[in-house]
Length: 287
Image 1: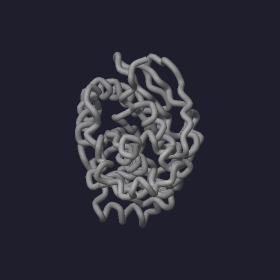
Image 2: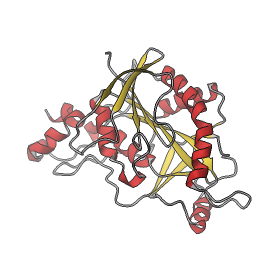
Image 3: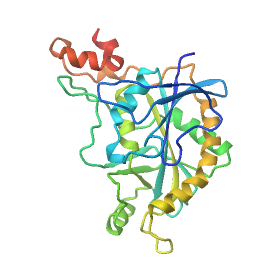
């Protein structure tokens, strides 16, 4: 088996990759607990990919129950440098219609108390997140999705809410007033952790609804979302094949090396157990 450089995180409705030649399933132990499921290792168009169903097969986990640290850590252990995250989202603007795809370039945090850093326990790091996605990888997502025939919007802000309930009308109107574009429950923590792990990250967001602000549309519901997700999945599967083919796997992530300027704590005072736990992420700086 060759080195796995590409990771795909599948969101609501996307629990497997169509057309993947499955080679193995890998259960990865992490210092943060278990990932959402086993990683499905396979080949897509001759390229090896690690696929993880974000909510577990059968959709067992709430957004707030996801072990984001374990999920990203496991991909790091497998050698992944480029992560494509697929996510169902609501639209906060008229121009983003259900079944459209959005490739956001910014995030806004409305979650509460979710673990979203690998650091602490005696080791301090401050990583820049001014530009939270990888522009190069996002371009691969845009091109792959458009080649599959999707209506794709490039750029925009993804507001990450806590969930699992959807927005109140007052919240939805306020988000629109602030100019946010789409709303979801999962991708911000992934983006933060991928950056700390020096990995490239991009989101392919599948619009399913208009949240609850639209006067002429029914308020969002779980069953309605899943009905639109089912329509989106075939297009998303086709898009992923094109995206995988475009990822520059012969190159390292542009974020490799950022921890050299982000780790603050002197090595001599970092607890041994922390150094051991974070070896896949910080080992090259702390040996």
